[in-house]
Image (cartoon, rainbow over all chains, first blue to last red; front, side, top):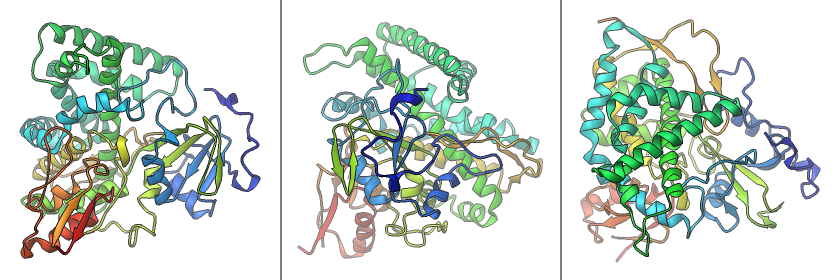
Length: 408
Length: 65
């Protein structure tokens, strides 16, 4: 943690734009980590404010400003944009680069995540989802996070990456060590272990390439016909690991939490098991209301942006959950309206860094919900959830979500 | 009614394809918008209009001819 990165507050920020806000902290007793962001809006802070916490950074709250920050990479860079600023962190490919450098690995990944590519693997995703749910459906209860929401995206990742299904437990252990610790030493060790796994696997795939993402990465050639640098390939493999697991896990956690407490929503989806269009439209609304990612950009050069002075290397936090409830963009934004017709949510970001896995993520959630409701049409929260397990930060969510239903 | 896409602005969200696959699709390389029917048949106009309004990038446009 580099708290002293700025001698806070810096002199380019006027006092009226400074507000004490901690990106990572969820107060004890707060059941929903997105609420710390909505509390900000309700408190009437300026829509672009600066907090001295976590190295000092801006927070944008208006949909239009957040969208513009996503789009204008000439001001808001994604290169070395970690918050707080971190050393020894790999520059992930392609997301850690701005266009045009970004284009090389983005173009490499894009064909594997198009809607068509994702449609083609739906049967296998469905099979993996069904196996997991069948494992606990008759029991009448589960902890949704470790028993499904962590396992399913990890299992899907192994499949896409070309890794054997038997490695699931090993990778769950790695993912847990990486995502669930705030100890930099433990996290660093987990990063090294994940890189070592990817490195060994990529070497194997170089010798025996197959029809999977790892093989595509290691056999790709740059514009001059040469392989990409080994480190860039590893950084791309690592990106797929870090970006595709925790985000889906916690989005599902929020969605199942909503469904467990809202019988009308469960009935809505049950009624549309044979209506994929209606099912998908309603999932878009749950994606809008359950945006778990808070994205950070780094200011490239001193400039004025829509009335505020920004300085080179200032960090800017872009909370999607706030953008998605801006009343100037969304009619009746606080209402979960599963029939919502116009829904330009930014849960996957916009602009050149739009989440390359967005179609996969939505498909994983859709398939999971369909397979779940076929087997477990009604379910509720276990009344005693035990200790609060909500956490905030760049991905918000829960470590535990205990569900119950009539045992079969 | 005609629909148009600005491929410099499209980022491949595919919301148009999800909502009105008769008119909009996506390519297999970049996942960007492909318009199957630039001249939208009258029975699909409402659906196509909704698809245009749901583009998070504002990459789609409607013209009368």
